[in-house]
Length: 594
Image 1 (tube, rainbow, N blue to C red):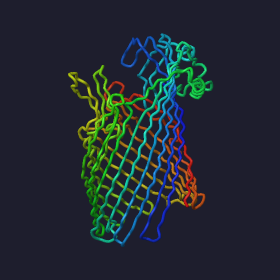
Image 2: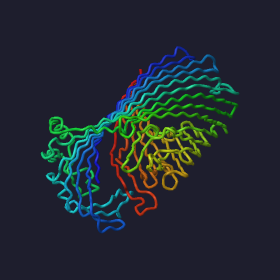
Image 3: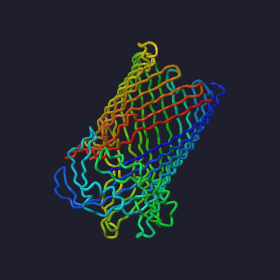
């Protein structure tokens, strides 16, 4: 039923860059960046645990009784990312270039997830009827739910304390990279052939663990009144506009936290850490590559080969115990690519391209824990043997520089992706018993084709005075998927179209951009889809001095919600499954350049 949110985001970013360039042939830089992200989310929810379904039709029904539960969940999320990068470029001659880059980054994500709940007995007063026929995504209409006696919902004396779960998991990821490149006439400094070759190595080390405690009352007969924790300033939950008769008691998390910290002796805690959440993965990727170039008048060609060797080793818990399962694998790939460009005239270019690329599996699919359920004869495990997704893409594009600051581009593409990854169930015999095993595997190919159109006019030269600072950027992408897991063969998260247009304005030291984005339905499974959405964003900048710039950014400034709907051929196709009404976000920033 209702799931209400209270959100706050604090985001800080610091970038320091030192540069040294004594002449035109040598350049070096040292960059340090620090990014801190603190997300403060509280979820308020109410659940009805119903029984006794009667009078059921295709869209309606009634439950004779139910128990009600009110609960809060804190979802604070903290992320800290630190990155240090050194870069050097050396040009021994006009045609040759040597580049060296080394970087080290570390990221830590801490995600506590405490929650507390109170529950009523099962009673006829909380039985309810429902009607699905009015659900409509276009006007944000949800199912109708009518509780037999809504006044019981807010009777705090009926609620008994269940538990306080203080959960916490942490991810830490460290990445070190080194890259060396050498090129001769690679940028077409003169007509004829050129080349570029290089080497890159990346080492990734990622770990995840969970540490949680579940608290209940040391004396269950003592009870813990809900009334003292109900927020007196919030008599109606935020979702009341969608469920008008579900006026449930909203818990104030701060009041409960203060009580819990001051009365620890009233609670007893047991370790509830999920060992199944633990894993560690190390991934080493070594690449060697080479590229040949050719420039002649209006023609240019760039083609290359990239060889990648990947080694993966993982460690994860076995069946929620201290025992661990270790896995290793490695694989090699050769990835060709080329781009041909023909300048049809001074303003129009035609491009053809082909490229092969890799999409490595998600880390939990490679390194997740292995769990056994001997009572239900089920096993869930990761698969270090997963091969990366391999894509082959073709594209053709026409670029037209209409005038200074005015540009149009049209591009068509087709991409085939082999070794798609999906979780399936198989049967496996262990000690004479047949277990059902759920595991991610590589499956058949999928494909997507599309068309991209772009137009830019950054200054309306036909206007005079202050209006001459107006401009526009517009993009439209059309896509068609084949053999994907989404309804109709679309790829997951792939819309049929996406469109955005931005209005630009510049006047002296001030600049601004107002952007409208529209994205069509995006399948999340064979039976569900994220509904199409529209969003307005705003960016404002003011150049105080040559070094100092003030920045203001707003996202979803019109508070448009996101919806998830049922998709497919069923009776409730297109009906709302979930509405996420998360409001807007605003950022203020300062940029200073020495």
